[in-house]
Amino acid sequence: MKNIMNGMPETALSWVEVSRAALRHNIRLFRDLIGPRREFMAVVKANAYGHGIGEVAQVAIENGVDWLGVNSLEEGLALRRLGVAAPILVLGYVPLEGLEDAVAGGLRFIVYNPETVEKAAAVAKRAKKEARLHIKLETGTHRQGITEKQLLPFVRRIRKHPGLVLEGLTSHFANIEDTTNFEYPRRQLDAYKAAVARLRAEGIVFPYKHMSCTAAAMLFPETYFNLVRVGIGLYGLWPSKETFLSCKLRKRRPLALKPALAWKTRIAQVKVIPKGAFVGYGGTYRTTRRTLLAVIPVGYYDGYGRSLSNSSHVLIGGRRAAVVGRVAMDFLMADVTDIPGVGLEDEAVLIGKSGKEQITAGTLAALAGTIAYEIVARINPEIPRIVV
Ligand SMILES: Cc1ncc(COP(=O)(O)O)c(C=O)c1O
Image 1 (tube, rainbow, N blue to C red):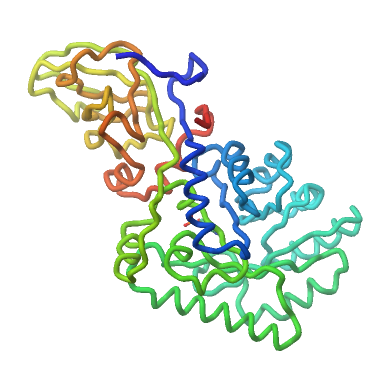
Image 2 (image 1 turned 60 degrees about the vertical axis):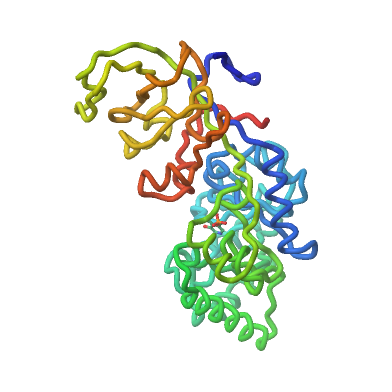
């Protein structure tokens, strides 16, 4: 068996391959869904859900995405340094001390604190620049945001400052991925619409209204308004089984998403260990036969969760090899006894395809008791990403 390194640094212990074709395909699916007139935000926070923020941003822009959504000031500025000129909205919290850089970098940001508004106004005035703000409305997630009652005074506070541009009103669903019962998101949507109507009656309109994430985009066109924020779906992953099931129940054809990410490594050692030998920390696995063991140089520091100990598989030469023993900080071990011809530095696929076999982020998530979002977002950002 031979390694296929695709031009990777030859010393990388593991690497992430991101398929440009898959990203493009997924972007097109969502573009078809939301139509050409609404604007499309690719959510590239958390290092583009582990896929590599610079790489994904570039492919997204090339394929007609209008906006990029990040979590932090640093992510937004990093994109600007890479030459990204598209509108960037910081979806997370911008510390007061960071507002100057946010305004200088032309980043839009979410507001819900009066302190942020006042500081942004002072910064914009001093810099003779505009600060573009999107208010986050609390509709039931109880994360970032202000209540409907606080909205009108908050808008008035913003409008007092000539350097502040009130560009958007946004909210976020709390329970749209994890359920097939959409009563709660409907209540959130109704609350959002009521707030929009109330402000319209006061003569206040928002250039951008946005509330939709992937699951909402898949299931509820009434959540689109004029800007749709797509994260997980862009990467070819389903938000949840419930979202897939809900598409079926609601007679909406499930999107033919293509996972964009493959995570690969190479075997660090192949060795025979006797029957009855313990493998790894804690002796949680004991061989029941003479075993051919592959030592794989990836562990929980890399983002391969310890909760996958003794439960997941890796793919080697198109065959499944069970992960045996505890996943350590930098290593895991796999039983390759039944795979012929395994050698040093052969490729092992942690997520992705090999021959006819495939391991998805969803499969690992189910084994680890988490969601696909966490599996990909946790892949250590230091691991090289290449677009293939
Ligand atoms: C505010 C906000 N908008 C949009 C998204 C995208 O969600 P999804 O990845 O489910 O499309 C997220 C993700 O958590 C988010 O926090």
